[in-house]
Amino acid sequence: MTSEKHVLVIFPHPDDETFSSAGTLARFVNQGVPVTYACLTLGQMGRHLGNPPFATRESLPTIRERELEQAMKEIGITDLRKMGLRDKTVEFEPYDEMDAMVQALIDETQPTTIISFYPGYAVHPDHEATADAVVRTVGRMPEAERPKLWLVAFSNDAYDALGEPDIVNDVSAYKDHKLRAFKAHASQTGPFLEQLANPDRDVSGAPNDAETYLSKEFYWTYRFE
Image (tube, rainbow, N blue to C red; front, side, top):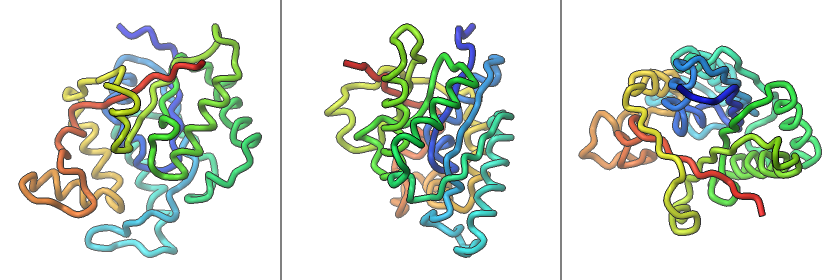
């Protein structure tokens, strides 16, 4: 049985939680652990408009909000926070405001673990800004009061710089939850789902190891100096 009391998830975009953590989060929910997901933006500037396209630049924010809500149902998360920032501008938010937002979430939920991105290895500027705010804020807390940090690293050099992941979760038992969450995020996940259906093809915009995303999830812990 897990010893977790509350898990706080902080990502900037709808679908970040699905690609990185849907199986892990579904498992926590199944174990009775409260999970709060703070999604900073609605992904208004997402690259994809569906495959074939079914969204426009004007309709995409509304569509992605509905997709996010549906994905939460598939994962089992009932505490979804839409934090109201704008996609591709998180990096420009003042540090003190970002940190205050993270601290307020921590103060309210009292998490034993926070799931977010690993600073320096998260590729997208919004990812990096989110990661920096989480690490800065937790780093200012007294050591005995800090929640654990489970951080996602996507950049190609992550393994060289950080070593092997500290946590490898086999979430194959929750594969169906994760696949349904991917399907919920239909405007953005078309290439991934196509790659999953055709593993011998090289689908543009999708990882070749798409199947792995359904069965294993990887995290690095953060060691404050």
